[in-house]
Length: 402
Image (cartoon, rainbow, N blue to C red):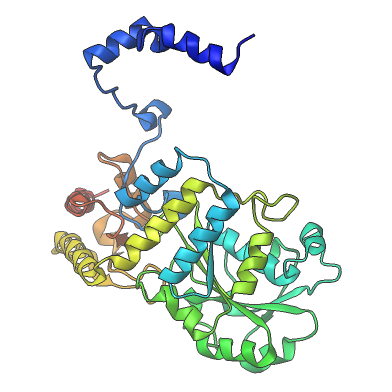
């Protein structure tokens, strides 16, 4: 019978390296084995990487994680920890960094919206958590401005609620009733809707209705991380893998402590809950924490100057090309950084926007831009030096004629 004592007695009789690792490993170790050649996984799989001249779009894999984030991820990958305890501590640290009452890491911004809604509906009640999306005994409606309907509000409807559309403040107040669970605001469309953010929050406070603001792509500026909770929104959502440059599969839900606790009760690792499949592992939690720590400490003015410099290089490369007009613009809210906007007179250029996008993607090196008749070149997700490559390739494609 092998006991702990006999195991160590046998272990002590083995050659220190050879007995444990085998002859080949021992020889390699003693000889100082060379560092293994890194695999080119994308090449093996036939997937072609590209220079990101678009921005933080999910289908283009958003941002690249900086070394601080990867260090945190690699650190976490080597240890076991109680996941709920880690969730608590990371949330507390992030909340202090972004000046929120509470915070949690979610599996993306859409997950944060689902979990936040689930928290509002259930209040953390174990029976209601199991029942979702069956809303018996729960409120059933979420109010939105019609102009704020967007391609991600399915994240709210996952919980079984009905979205009630309004256009004016008077309509919103008239729509509030016993079944109103929450009011949802899409931050990117603040200037589009008739009810602006501050008035929206005030109406929520007036009627005792929870307000949520989807700010997924709305940093930079860094101040937005605390602007909307300070404004009075009860819950605020951010993507983790866009401007913050954390894991793309992570997000942030910030806001009231009671609502964050209720959202957590609907999330993994809790079983039999609507968020069980929205798992956040220890690597993503620490990666997100490291990303937020880095982001709030960045010299954002210096970053802005760097983006302007890159955009100017692209802009100058287009000077003098017949049929091409280009300018630098900064989107009002989402992706609030310098972009180069290119408009084409295709009768002169002999090539359309989608054709340019195709040629850039198929060329060497491959360059990804958002396809459209009007091209918008995002410079902030480029690696240093990419702006010169993009500028040269754009000019080549535009002057080659279709």
